[in-house]
View (tube, one colour):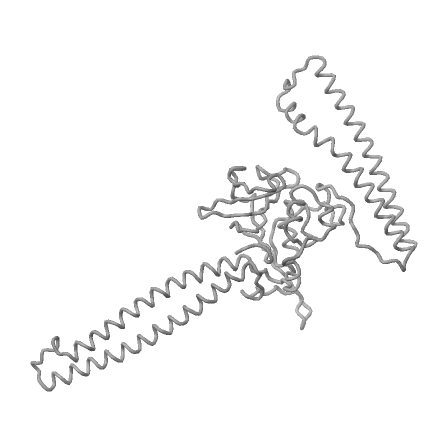
Length: 387
C-alpha cells in the first residue's frame, strides 16, 4: 500500500509539473504574439515573409490550444490520483469505472505505457498457444460462416442459396449426361438392328430413329442450359465469397467478443477521452477500447488486437473505416486521419463522413486526389462493415 501511495504522490507531482509547463508555454506564446504584433506595427506586411507568415497565420489558433490541453490533462491526472486514493481508503465503497484523463492525440502511447517506439506497419500473422504443447503457433483462418453479423446475414443467405442451386444443377447435368449416353447407346443398337434386317433401310426417315435423335437433342439443350446456369452461379458464388471474406473475422478472433460489440456502443470513457476524427468514429461505431489511438495507428492496433478479428484491405466497403497515414495529402501530418465509409457507387466512387463532414456524406475524390495508394487503406470491422 505504501508503494501505491508513493506512486500516487509521483502522479500528483507530474500533474503539477505539467501545470507549470502549461503556464510557461502560455508566457512564451504571449511573448511570440507580442513580437509579431510589434513587427506588424513597424510596417512589416502581413505576408512579407511568404510561407512563414502563412504558416504562422494558419497555426496560431492551434498553438494557442496547446497549454489549455496540457492544463486539462494535468487537472484530470490529479483528479484520477485523488479518486484512486479515495477508493483505497474506502474499501467498502464500490469503485466507479475509471475515466482516464484527457490525453492529447499526439502523446497517447507514452501516457498509456507503450513508449514512443517506432510503430511498424507490418502485419504479423495471428499467433495462439497450442493447448497440447504450450507452443505459440499460427492461428488457423476462421471458416466462412463461423460468425456472420446481422447486416451481412442476407448476403450469406444468398451465398448458401446459390451454393444449393449450383449443387442441384451439377447433379442435373450429371443425370442428363448419363441419360443421354444411355439413349445414344439405344440409338446405335436400333440402327444396327434395322440395318441387319435390311441394309437398305432409310434411317433418317425411320420414326423410331427420329424420335430417339429428337430426345437426345433435347438432352443436349437441357445440359447446355444447366451448364450456363452453373457458370453464372459459380461467378456469383465467387463474388459473394470474396465480399464476405473481406468482412470475415481474421485468424485468432474470439466470436463472443465480436458478438458483444455488434449492436453495442463504444465504452463511455473512450468517447469522453478522444477528440476530432477519432471521437467521431468512436461515437458512431462500436469499437474496442484499445483501438482509439492516433488515427494513423488504427491499423497497427487492429493487428495487435487479433481477438476482435479486424482486417484491412484496399477495397472500400460500407461501414469500413478509411485510415489515412500521416503522409497522406489530406491527413493531419501528426495524427493521420480516419473517416467512415457511407456509400460506394458502382463506378467505385467512395462517399464518407468524418468530424469535418458529420451529417452529409461527401465524395472522397472531392476532398483529395489521393484516393488510393500506400497512404490509404480500409479497416474492416466484422460486426459493423457490410460485405
